[in-house]
Length: 166
Image 1 (tube, rainbow, N blue to C red):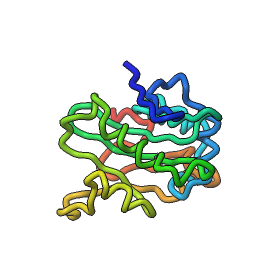
Image 2 (image 1 turned 120 degrees about the horizontal axis):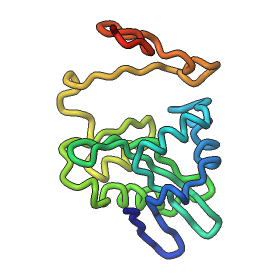
Image 3 (image 1 turned 180 degrees about the horizontal axis):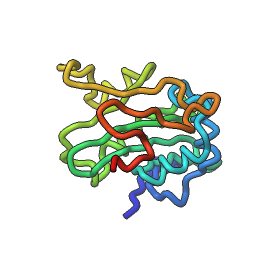
Image 4 (image 1 turned 135 degrees about the vertical axis):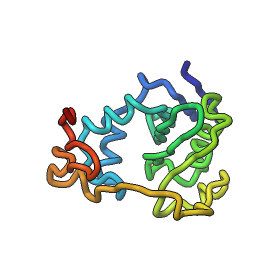
């Protein structure tokens, strides 16, 4: 079921049919966290996520994506408001809609990564992890640049990607 929130002439909606994937890709392919991301990757990511589009009379103005099991965990990512629409509190409102979504209540853990919006997220209770030594990550830097994402590297301890292990 799709949810929607309105604030004056603006709306946040989880209806995936309203997403302007060209606009989302256009922003993400230049964002510091996803530089040169292929359009097909953006489409697959959106298809597997709970998406929040921010809309005004002129069309889509922002976006947030949540990767979640809707029971215990949510990872907030790809949050942006177009530069022309910034300074109106729309990013904060978009995040309030994300945090208030009915399917995301009662989760044990929320996570996100940011280089420049710490104050925004602190306003929603996010903080540097108390026990960062418990968290681990595998990050392939610049995976989208120059076709690096075409072949995923094999991981130690398991079969190479694309093999059955038999």
